[in-house]
Length: 164
Image 1 (cartoon, helix red, strand yellow):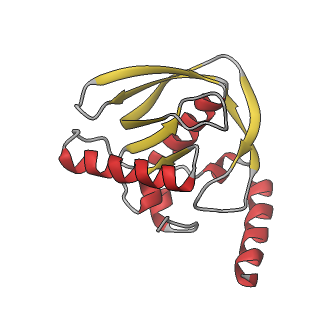
Image 2: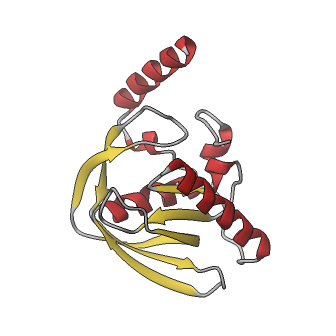
C-alpha cells in the first residue's frame, strides 16, 4: 500500500545513514513497488518508511524503466538551464502540475555495497532525481508551486477526495 497525501511522513526528512541489510531491504521493497506502479521514481516514504532511499528511472525514454536504487542520495550540482515540466506523485494520484527544475544534475549516492558514486543526469531522469531527492528531504512536489497555485490545487484535491 502506497502512502497518500496528506500523510505527515511526506514532510519528514530522511537522515543519511550507513548502508546496511535493513536499508538494502527497503531498497528492494521500493524497487518492487516502483515496478508494480510503473512509476518513474519513488522515495522510501512512498512505501511508508522514512529512509534515505530512492529508485529512479535513468532512461530518457519515458516509456522505458531502467531503475537505479540510490542510497543517501544528494544533488551536488545543478546545470545552468531550467525548464518547466509535468510532475505528479503516487501519493496524489490524478494530479499533474508544471514544476520548474534544472535540466541537468549531478547526484552523489551510495550503492547497495555502501560505495559512494556519482551519476550525471539530464532531461527526464534529471527531473525524476530532483523530484525524488526532494521527497527524501521532506519536500513534497507541490511545495515547489506558488502559494496561490498550491492552494487552488489542494482545494480541488480535497473536493475530489470527498467525492470518491
